[in-house]
Length: 163
Image (cartoon, rainbow, N blue to C red):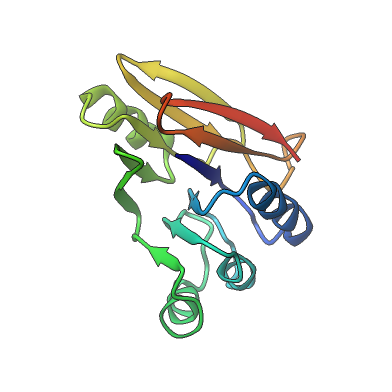
């Protein structure tokens, strides 16, 4: 199963649209967002995606109430997990958080096939034993080229995509 992974939108709507277009072109039905919408506006764009979008909150999410309201009333495909999510996708147990420190600690437990996080705005892929840890970088493009990632649950591998 292919899963689109992205993080740190920070209201950069053009790059967000590019990332969603890439996921759509790859026929990816499930996305994971690792936090930092910033305002509720990106949640509306993500909510229009034709597939599930699993989301965790980050430190840059100002109006969580409004984002939650959009998810519960207008966009049932936005699945909010709070600050930490655990999912089973394509037969793989996955954990998601915004913060790499916690993600790497979760990866070291060996309880998950993959753990995803954001926050640093820098893409990274590492293995902790058999567990893949991925930071897809940033949609924003503040620290360089904006990026997202595609995770393959069958192979337990990920690829960074430059927008």
